[in-house]
Each structure stands twice: as structure tokens, then as C-alpha cells.
Image (tube, rainbow, N blue to C red):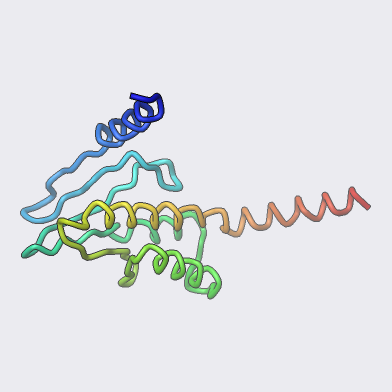
Length: 148
């Protein structure tokens, strides 16, 4: 086995070992993943199987956490457009604060992967919080003044 195959196997073993599913009620499961959100908490997604259709959701946590980080989506059309572009890129849908996908067992892995990637990318928008933007702006202006 080439070293790269072994390295990939170690990674997939790591992901599998650190992914845990917990039954929440009679239908819904929580899946804790090894991926971190903006607060360095593990990303959790929720899923259920209803008549062969599998529903995956973030439970509204991603956008709520952006709000906690100081990203006000209600007053920024640009930030909303960024989020809408991200969810479209991954085929994710949005209903109010919740991100979700509907799939079947055959496409479950890709759907889970897409939802996790959308959550990760949206979580990175925390850098656009007002304190961060002000700090970056001040730093850029100071650098400009020093270089003149």
C-alpha cells in the first residue's frame, strides 16, 4: 500500500471515530462531527428518515451562531447574498434560520458532506463582524499612512 493510501485511510478512520450519532427522539438523530464551527464547538447536524426520505438540518444553529458573533443578517443585503450564494453552491435550502437538505440513502453521504461544507463556509463569515471589520480597516489605514 503506498504511503498516500495509508494517510487517506488514517484520515477516514479519524472522521469515522469522531463522528457520533445519538437518537434524540423516535425519529431524529444528532450527528456530532469532528469539524469545528466558529466557536470551536463540534458541528452537529440532525437527521431523520421519513418513508425513505432523509432530512438533514443544522437545526438553525449556524445562522444563530453568526448572530451571536455580531453578524446582523437583517440589515446587510451583501452578507445575505453571500450566504444565499453559499447555500446554492452546495444545494442546501434555507427555511428561516434552518439550513437543510432532503435526500435518500443512496445520496446520504454526499448530502451530509454538502451540508457540513455549507455550515463551515457560512461559519467563516464571522470574520465580517463589525469589530473585525473596524479593526482591519484601522490597521489598513495605519499601514497606508506609514507607507507614505
